[in-house]
Length: 373
Ligand SMILES: C[S@@+](CC[C@H](N)C(=O)[O-])C[C@H]1O[C@@H](n2cnc3c(N)ncnc32)[C@H](O)[C@@H]1O
Image (cartoon, rainbow, N blue to C red; front, side, top):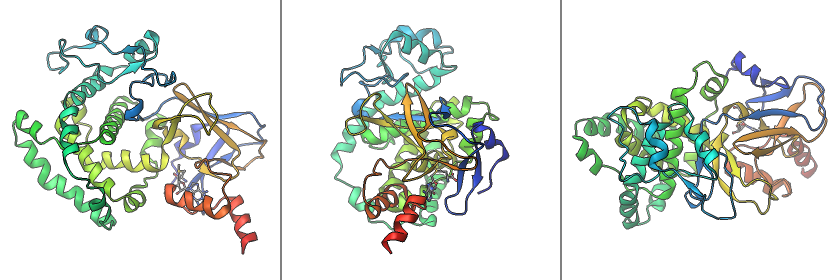
């Protein structure tokens, strides 16, 4: 993978360079003292709050109030001024709130001020309208995970699955009347529902982002872990197809234009290796809640180290990366992906290989492995 000259402007504190052992990585641009925030990012391409927390986490600032439902649900009055044009499929009488909850009027207003946000709200609302029926059908089919997980995966198996969609499924759907298309919506679970919202938010953000912005350029060059992740969990290939099919049938035209198979594969393939967890703020690591995940392309060049020099944390809807020790010029800047740094070498490395699909080549692993042999 080549390094785009442009990604060098991510932070004045580091440069992105190629390594021989772990793809691209961040190297400090000088001696930097402990406590320095080397990166703060606020532009995620996509975020996903898990179904369980959908009413309990603010969709603007990600606040959480001990499992209480957020006070402000989106209502028709707050969106009606944003609806222009007759083809918007938001119905004033049956508005369900698009599955969007906020901790305050301020957060709801901030969310509604995002340019063109009505496009995303419209899709969330359409999906929410169809979801109960899709879920009901999902709940009547027997457990299929075992069947799908027994498939052995290769690059060409993934490609043929998508070719099948492209060559057979899409033309069939394109030839149907709108009402008939709805009958082809697949049965989906809560997990697919959340992932569909994640992909749609990514399409929406990418559509309205300056194509020359650093977020867009870094997103384009993110490393995909599609093959590693689907090989480990083959059911994900089926899952991805359901996500695509639902989006293809339900997306209104302004976002439908964005939906291509290569882009969907890039959004999901890069999410597998680059997403950060959205964790509860202000709680100890052992007791905090995990709300979901989000992707910040500019923050995706940090490699993992089992002795990291950066601590990452969330502040509202941004993420900060702060040095936890002094570092020297040209030193690699690394974070912890795992949350299991206290485990013994073998177990820690197995965890990284199983959940992140790489054999850790950090200094601590290298020196601990040498002392084991
Ligand atoms: C979030 S990306 C980090 C940036 C990545 N190196 C790149 O070129 O895009 C995570 C990927 O980097 C590589 N990586 C990160 N930390 C590593 C480590 N300690 N040892 C080996 N590979 C690592 C793995 O391929 C992993 O899937």
